[in-house]
Length: 92
Image 1 (tube, helix red, strand yellow):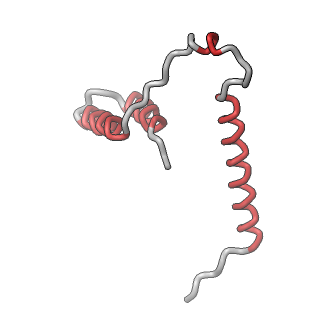
Image 2 (tube, rainbow, N blue to C red; image 1 turned 60 degrees about the horizontal axis):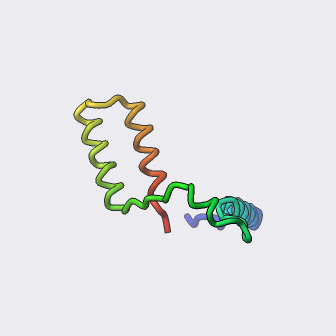
Image 3 (cartoon, one colour; image 1 turned 180 degrees about the vertical axis):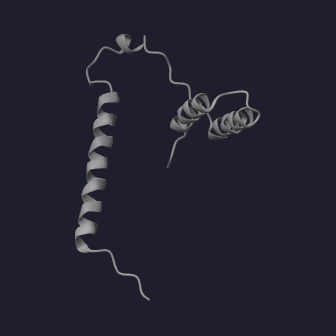
């Protein structure tokens, strides 16, 4: 039995959803950019952003799984730390 094709309405909803996501992404990006003409000396006080390699994050996740499997940490702590690590992963 053949599967039915996606309806035109669903395609439109998906496109609208992607457009809204793109607009939100652009707004977040615009908020993080410094205003033009701003004093650069004021921005020096901001702590530098430390980038962590993907391999390092994945190693930390593996270590976290090992600690959870060995019952060194509770499930809630495991989930919290895992979510924090996954948030650091950059997705292309």
